Image (cartoon, rainbow, N blue to C red; front, side, top):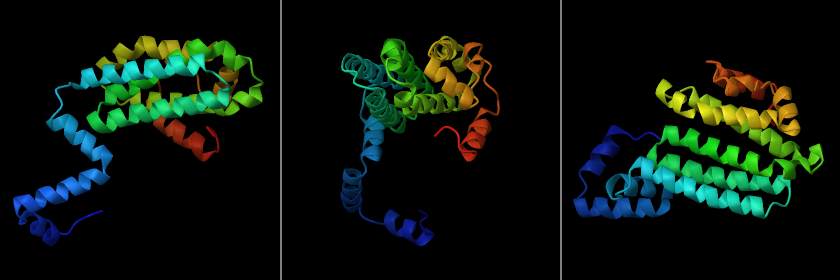
Length: 209
């Protein structure tokens, strides 16, 4: 939404008390903006502190999802819930490195700890989960390639682990091959510079669904 010059000028001329009332009314309806302003204006936590708090929460949720594993479908729902936690952190802090780091942590832990449980189901029961993980892996690579090269160095081990975990899971590996994902991109840290366009083309052609 764009605002006219006249509207902006009218708002700027409102009395301070009236502006405050309007701001608080808006914040009550916009949780994302309220959380961001609280973090930027009031919180004593740094971005790194906040990232570690979210990581600890994810670890607890991963523990719960692993201990209470019911099916690949329910695990997929758990991953979506955890992804929401990561998205909230990003919206609050604009932590681009944390977005990649936390997603890698989540996937690596989930795949490492639930491999046998996932493979205990028929491939058809794991298809949606496998596809979602491969799609998320593409997203992670697309986000990682935008970061400063120093961050890429920091993430090499996590990227390598994800590639190895995918390669070690027959269901995931089949899905990766079908959707054009080369696990060596992750294992050897050689993500194509045009990975975002590759992902877009795959989606246009009906893949990653």
